[in-house]
Amino acid sequence: MPNDDAVPGASIAVQTYGDFLNFNPHLHAIVSDGCFLKDGSFQTAPAFMLEDLGEAFQYEVLKMLKKEGKINDVIIENMLSWRHSGFNVYIGDRIEPDDKAGLGNLARYIIRACFSQERMVYVPAEKSDGGIAKVIYTSKDRKSRKVFTALDWLARLVTHIPCRYEHTVRYYGYFSNKSRGMRKKADADDIIPTIMPNKLSSNEARQNWARLIQKI
Image 1 (tube, rainbow, N blue to C red):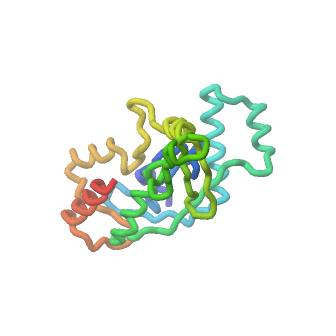
Image 2: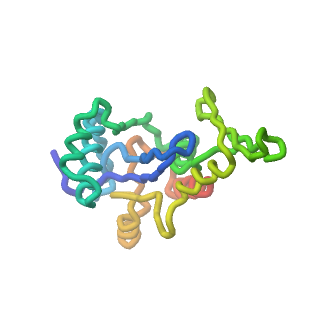
Image 3: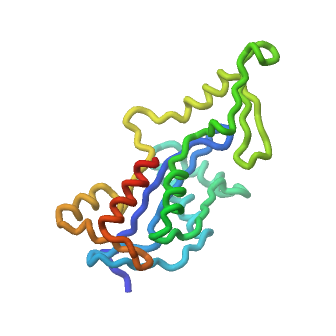
């Protein structure tokens, strides 16, 4: 039966870059596999259908852009006729509560930097053909690489620096600051509902969370 008190939780990071710092807006999210209830229990959600989530995501984004006056019904109709919608949703494997390595890797990935120094080679002007400093960058899958002038590389990089006071990571539902504050006031923040039985004590869970925060 539906429960009006059920609240999901999500941490979402906004990212704007593709593999070669091209403009490629997308979201990385850690989402609860169900909803938290007021009594501290957790209700697992049914399996998600990727096709349905993709259509829902497309609908919400287009509705938001129309409300902001960025697009109109003519543009929306045109976009809906495209063979490839430009919208895609991917769901990774479930991470169990005691999988510290998995949680750490995912937390680092959702707010990863826009480029990797390990895949970047800087060629100073005196060692470059034409006397212009260059950057050689290898793709994430190591299958391709591109050469940029140093200034072009910097120009691509600065377009992805957030504006002042702009938040690139947002927390929703059960994970929001408001919800956490209300639970703390009610002295109920020690309740740690999970999908699977959690073997960690409250103190161990706090230490684990602090470890993840320190990593990112």
